[in-house]
Image (cartoon, rainbow, N blue to C red; front, side):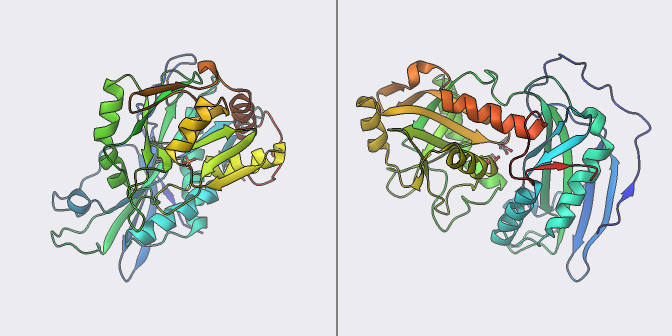
Length: 358
Ligand code: PLP
Ligand code: COI
């Protein structure tokens, strides 16, 4: 159990009015959580303080070699007025998988969850309640040693900041267009693709800019070796419904193991679908589309929830999926996942929805 000191702000900021457009990740709440790590001492000085700039030396290692981990989850205001999280232990476990790969210290799962709950509880009046909105939670850890040698840092800072947010895509639940990227790659096996760390996103920007310029929302990455097998989207895992079966790329080491992905696989199986986690080549996908067997395509992610894909571009080919409309499975998954998250539906698994003040 962490002992968390709380210093409340004397100048609370104006909260966005109900109905005001929030965008994604643009507004920040009044408080943040911080905790330091020092080799030989462990984690110490857990605290919640007013949201403000932090001070670091220009030599802090995170600026030079990118030793950092981040996570993303959301808090929702339930119909009972209480604040809820969705499977926060999964984020804590994934954070440790990233920490391990990046030679950063482990953060006990209970401490991660306690830190998130504590800061959300302090700022729970910031949780927006308009449909489709939530409080996006960004835990992250950075290397803080003043040192320019390439080596793991001996000191770290773990923080949690909060951002009331609307839909990740400006289009909301409307189907997005995705660009299948065949020039650049995001990750290779043995690399850091499975970790949630800034470098993966830095490497993705060039293709994302290209896709945006061509009128597409995000990039669908192919495997880094053969550039043949589907991996994931910029900020989502990807699912297809082909011949009545739900198919998603298997976790290969170069794909982020999404928590929404895991939840959707469980839900689809419980809806009675056969779910295959396997390799899917882009050629198989194009063939399924040509033969009318590709019924639906959607991305899954915390920020995006379930995002129907209406258009996929590969080379000179632009494939329209499901007439560019929201497919019935995508809609059902969106309604079920958001229903469990917000308490509109019972949590059939008992531990997916977690009360912040419990
Ligand atoms: N893949 C990438 C690259 C992501 O950034 C995300 C978002 O977190 C996901 C997949 C989906 O993961 P999750 O469902 O845990 O948010
Ligand atoms: C999330 O869905 O939580 C993400 O981290 C996606 C993105 C904003 C990087």
